[in-house]
Length: 453
Image (cartoon, rainbow, N blue to C red; front, side, top):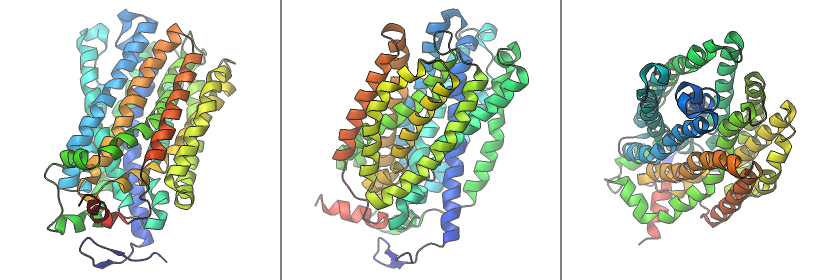
């Protein structure tokens, strides 16, 4: 039986029903799936068509670098989004803020699908692309922390790792959905047809409007978290400037969380964006889009299973142990990844992609509980979002660009060395994080504040 907990005022609080917990878990997973779907179809398009559509004058190599440059813009926007939406999430609530981020992401994504190409409107095309990509980054920057807090603040302490892994299913489900959408479009219009280059890639972006409406309906039908409502009703809680308070009181946790999560982003975006480009490039594996997209769908099934399993394991063995184990496994795997891909077969690509993303998932699953546990309720949304998106700048924004340049100058083996170095860095950051998984989130602000008095 789930034990009772105490609110910030000291009153006993009854455990939430299994039905309520399932509803919140579904809402968090559905929301992150939709937002990351919008985010990932951009990555797929950046690898497959954007160099031709928006940067035709640069040539294949430079066009690819420029395309991934626009991909990186969102990661620069994510910390800003974490600060802006973290402020409102900590001030007015998790639910209202998450509805806003969902709408922003949906509108920006549909508009990307409507941008004319560079041959039609010239330099205005890539400029519009960068602006809308920045808006996407703002939205995702505010999404992750809110979605994880939504479920973590509802979940019983002894199952927080399991329930915290549900919003972490968003990336794997979204990657499968994005790959499937592009695959269907590609099969309908042809692998190298002019129709796919001019119109086909736009379909997944425009159709995302349907998913956004579904996600909006789901989020409108859930309640604000009881932890936030209890904290908001207490006279001693509530931060006027959550960003300043989180930086002042817990800078170490923000920096270490960003360092620990750097590998998550590096592995995931190398798998979902860079490897997609590498596999279809004339200078890479030269696989067809159908082969690459099909492999992505299959890999996503294993990633989802690994995400849930690692969340459950973190409740038994601890968040830090599970995450650190994945970081250690990433070191040798990074060094053998590109030698495996050098076989230039569909099986080699599928194996390389799947193992890369499964290692990511083992580390990523427990993060949905780990980061909310690190911060006080009064600025938890802001602190968790800043730590998460700090890792995103380095691992998701910078690493794919550096990887594309390394491949052209030093060869693919240098990318493996880069990933191995990041793995070692993330291991040390993970082990240096404090362990607060045994304390209740409803009392987190009291326990941590006592250490500063």
